[in-house]
Length: 88
Image (cartoon, rainbow, N blue to C red; front, top):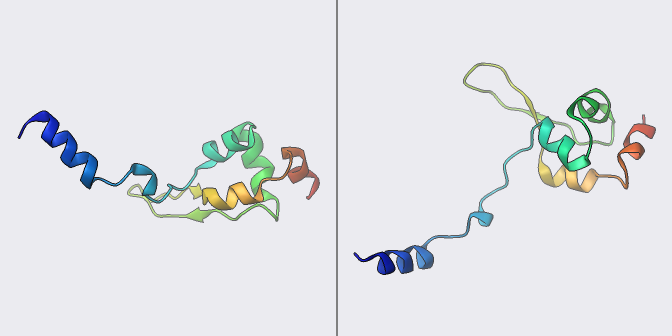
């Protein structure tokens, strides 16, 4: 199979990567999205009642980390990070 034939085959038969489900966000991802430090996010924002609750998934090491659904974080995002803190 020539390189151009292989390329044509792949372009026709592979779905774009964007159609895959989005991975869950860790605290670093959430903090980056909200434009704040991870420490501030973990100490203040994650505890605000209106902020989405994390999911805890098992790992091979037996420890779990908090993970958030990106769509929920995006919809819960206030106009500014300060608005999250004032809700407390």
